[in-house]
Every structure is written in C-alpha cells, then in structure tokens.
Image 1 (cartoon, rainbow, N blue to C red):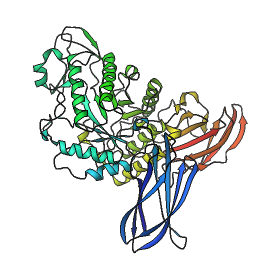
Image 2 (image 1 turned 135 degrees about the horizontal axis):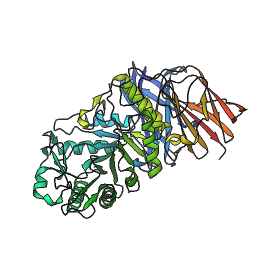
Image 3 (image 1 turned 180 degrees about the vertical axis):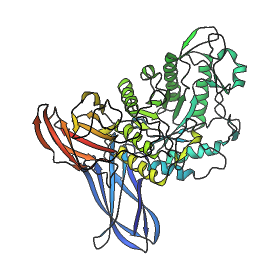
Image 4 (image 1 turned 90 degrees about the vertical axis):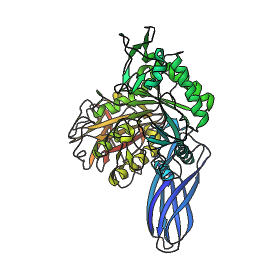
Length: 548
C-alpha cells in the first residue's frame, strides 16, 4: 500500500467552512485500514481523529473532513498515518491549510497566461495550484486590447496575435472558484493602442517637447490617468463592463515604471506618483460597486511610487523587483519597508528562472521569512522567469518538491511569520550569535542572517544560510546552494523571560515544530538562551514564546 499525496481541496477556507483534505492512496488489493489524522496549530496539537477506511484495489482519492474553529486568520498543518489492522504504519503524509476572512490577508498570488481555444487541463491546473496554497491568480494578457478589455467575439486575438478564447477564460474562472482561488484580470493603468490614441490624441501623456510617451517603440501609447481625465473615465467604464460580464474578483493594475512625471495636452504637469493613488482609490470604488468583496492591486514597478501607493486603498502591496534591488538583503528590505509604510501584506514579483534552483530556494526562504509572498507559480509546472509572463520556465521535479515544502511551511507557520507580525530585525543587532559564524546583518555573503519578527507574546528568528554562496546578488546564478552547517548552538540574548522555545525547518524530513530545552546563562551582554540545533541547510525557524 502506498500513500501518494495529501493536500487540501481548496487553497484556503472561510470561517465556518468544513476543511476537506484529499488523500491519494494506492492499494494492491481491497483493505480495511485506519487513518490517524492529526491537526496542528504551530507547536500544538489541536485535534486527533481515527477514521476507518475501506479501500479498493488500485489508485483512489479519499476525502477527510475536519471542522475548523471559527478563528481567523489562522494557519494549520494536517498529518496522516495509514494504520494496518496489526498496528503497523503503512505510510505518512503532511500538508497545510489556513482559514482566512479574505484571501488578501495572505495573498499567495499566482498566474495564468494560456487562454488559447484548444487549451486543456483546466481543472488539473487549478487543483495543482490549490495544492501549493495559491489563493489568487493574475490572468495575464487575457484582454482583447489594453483600451478595450472585452473582445467583440468569443474567439479573438490579442495585440501580439495570440489566439484567445473567452470560453476558456470563463472555464478557468469557474474552476478556480471551485478551489477557492480568486481571479484577477490584468489591466494597464495608462496603456492604449496606437489606433485608440489616434482617435483621442488629446488624452495622452506628453514629453515637454510635445512627443507622446511610447512603450516598446510605439506598440502602446501612454494615456493620462490623472483624476477626472477622459482616459480615466474610459478605463473605469471598461472595468465596470468586465466585472459585470465575467466573474472576476477585482482588478489588477499595472504600470511600466516610467515616466515619473509628464504633461497633459494643455502642457500641465501630471505627477504620476500622485495620480496613481487617486486612480487606485477610484478603481476600488468602481470595483466594489460591482461586487462588495472586490480586490484591487497595483504594481509598484521598481518599488515606485511605494510611498504614495502605500496609503492608497490597494488591498496589498505588489512590487516588481528591478535594479538597483539586486542583493539578497534587498528582498528582505523591500518586504519589510513596504509593510512598515502600508501595514499591508506584500507580494514581490522577482523573476528567477527555475533553472536557477538554488536562487529560487534561497529567495523564497528570504521572502517568506520576512513575512512576504512571491508571485511565481501558475501554469502547470510553470514558474515566472520573465516580466512577460508567457515566457515562464518549467520546474524540475526536485524544485517542485522543494516549493511544495516551502509553501506548506509558509502556511503552516503564517501566524508567527506574517499575520499580525512585524519585522524587528533592526531592533536585534548582535543579539543572535553562532560560534565561528558571522551573524552580522550588514554583511552580504558568508554569514547566517537572523531575520527577526515579533508578535503578541513571541518572537521568531529565521536563520537564513548564506555561507559559501557564490554571489551577494539574487539576480546572479548560483552554481550551488549554501554550505550546510552541522550541529550548532545559537545564542540569543533576551529582554523577556521565555516560557517556551521551539524550532522547525522546511528543509528536513519533517516540518514539525520541535521543542528545545534551552540552556540559560548570563554573560557581559546580559541574559541569554543557548539553543542547540541539529544543523542548518537553508532556512530554520526558531520561535521564542514569553508570558503575555
């Protein structure tokens, strides 16, 4: 008998909703067994059940239901054991799931980009994304034109002559919703076709000398998105039509990162860092008029203009990462600075070819440890490798297994990594040390970085291993991963009396929380804990709990 897999039927669950887990099992012959189901929240067991099963010969899927407490937002883990009548354990598997009031509380954003008439595997694609806990997908370049989003017929071609199908878009939306996945249509805040510009030449954005701003050598013309502009009203009307016609869950707004300022047809300066937040807020009003739970997202290309957009009504911060943010530390800094500005979740669009497996793993460790999210998963086996999403790459089986473990881990421990937790790394200089290893966060290589986050009654220390990496930049291919550490003792200087210590890692055999019998002491720097760990591969999480 073989336990093939365990995963949630949906990416996330709503308050009061029954959690359904799916176990894939292969049996050589009919058998009567017991499934021992254990539910964890962080380091605590919250429920155990023994469920009798009668299996038939061959591969089969079995549904296991669990009634979750109405506590949100909250991440859980589920582990099962298949128990033979004689008590032998025939197989084990684990997964994670969470209960959210709204997907934007923990936006595990993905992508879809194939809307061709002959596309297949619609259900399988969305089921796989749910297994990775992706709870929203961006429909990238689904539209007929940037200035006319809906097509004149069911079958149409986009501006790059890709054949697309409105029926496939509807099927993908329907399947996504069956798995609890929200669907966000890509739109561009100021992009129009040359034909549209020639019809409305006074709606455009202009250089000082009167030239229009163009994208890709005239492929698109930039229009004026300032409050009250005719282009803004036109695009808002397009949003209305889309949300009334298709069952999308909001609007994804893109920009191209330049210009920062332009002029309207009368020669007046248009400050785009101010125009964008006003456009976002107006989009929220229009979207919510069509559906009250609509979400709106805006792309801060190159982290611009994060200062003004952070105060808009966008549901979370979305940052497309470009130069000069090329250092590993920049991934942490982008996430935590945006969290501080907007007090919202943060999604990074940092494009890494999945052929660079060591880069992908280390980048996700940094982003997740910082309480952020990474848009990267989407089409079957696909991972974003380029800003033009159809140029995505394919994950190897090994990388796919790593990503599954990392996404499980991020959901399982989201209550100490992301939800209601703030970064405190800058507040802990020199308080986390390892003998013989640098933990100076100002270094960019050959160190172990302690990323520290604090919540109500606890602190988390994510140890990120950068020992031996070939480059301080995430944009440069790594020929190998970090140099693993053997058994280590981590010393943590404290300003709270600690009542419980535990650690976990997505890199080992099991992601379970392991209690640590910490040794206490005092040195010239004050009280400390010594925490013995069996080793460090890429990312290990330590959680310190104190009296609340």
